[in-house]
Image 1 (tube, one colour):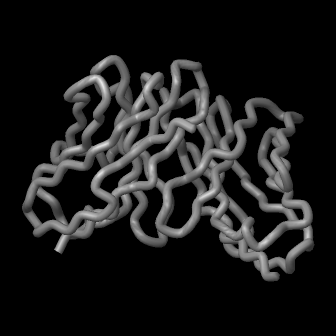
Image 2 (image 1 turned 120 degrees about the horizontal axis):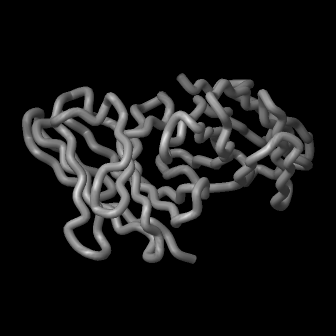
Length: 114
Length: 111
């Protein structure tokens, strides 16, 4: 069964450092997303990406964040200068081209900023 | 602003004891209501999509229903392996593809 894969599963970084979280979406999907979940809180939307550009972003997704599809299979989230409050589980998701189809999520990257 | 409220926050059931989880929503035009299952430390696993009031979907011991204001996830004769957090999410006409999630119901099924 096709699945979204994320690497690494856990990353620890120093405050102020740049991190790149990586995702391989399901192969025939064209919409890609990043969500995050701070421990004990709701899953929150960060950004959606389609046709090589951001289609929607939340207030959380400020200038410190960026996304990229560097090749035909990977989708990345970069945080330029991490803060303590960026510590969370980051989930990548993808969906096909149907107007309101479901999103399939990866297993997440646990980011710990120290 | 879209809002999703789930209740109860936590639910403990004996194996075989059926129950329902509630998801109340306020959106500017519902384009889809989604149920996910989340195990500890894992990503949400897709269960169901509902699009219009009156719609029902079933999968094994789970059945999801939808009205104009809320959705229910009915669990019939649950087993310990059904223990997880169940998340409800909505997509509204006010957003392109974004999902707004509720806080979830943590279900524990005791053997």
